[in-house]
Image (cartoon, rainbow, N blue to C red; front, side, top):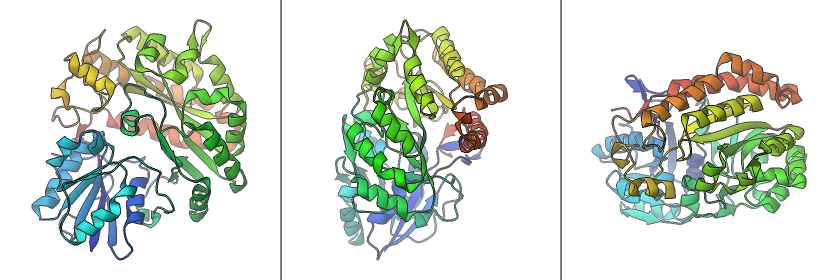
Length: 444
């Protein structure tokens, strides 16, 4: 039996697929390959960088799909199914919108692959795939090392993706992760994470956990075991970490360079509405995140600040103030994301009930929707004005002058290694951010 794994692209620029110069290894496909019995031949193609050989013989095609890649994934699925090849689609989007996906594949996989993937392969061998496999969330690949050999020669960034846990215990109303895992986190044994790190060659790692610090005691145990390994790493974390001095010390000592952190807003009303609990006490009349930023800087951590714009308390003026706050804070990187109504989230249901959704409520499939555009009617501006505000924030923060000013922040100058990382990835992030704006989903 032969299994073909595919990472779908997002969409196209002009008349050709977008080529992602900042591409990272698709870790979920390495996990699927490792879960597959050794007598099954496994090949992997990445639609972001290479042509998919649709006519190459195979017995089963598997795609892992996020909402932004859904339209392109359905195009790929149709090509294989026209050739009589069965297709199974899994990932976060099918789990949140299963009925949509059932028409696009021979089988839909809901939940985490570790629980039922062996059954999928067994059914495929007998040519008896079920229309739907219903699993739940669980611990990431217990006792399994991802098969990173499938990434060889594909030109990914020199960063190894790793995972300690899945999920987050917060319940932010706009977050697809909270909807997927229902405010739960599943963690691996620390010893298994250490074994995986030692099995690969790189010293720069990215823990792709939704919130690495969702369970502080578990994170501390991990950091203690990381210290002797002499690695450097980044991850995603919530701002409440700064209130635990022991956690911060262990984190810095273990080789942490910094985190993607969801600041989301500098408006208390917006934070309350989105239920961003770890940030609520950080925005007050005495300052905006000042104590938290000091702790991050004191520990030498570079910060990728993530903001969402378009909340019902937002205005064009408040969005401009958010940009000014990010510039004054000299974050190493910052993302200004137009708030997206992800299916299955409380935010989506609210907009649907208020009849404020655009693009027939399925912006991710609509032929005229473009990447980074607003997909709903905001409360205090038009959708076009929100889109323009987001683009203004991204272009201004990633201008050459802004990048040069941020280069001389304390966290970038904390070490030559950190400065080198910033000078390498800031221009790349700028290029990819601006190139993606206005991209259409899918190829056709």
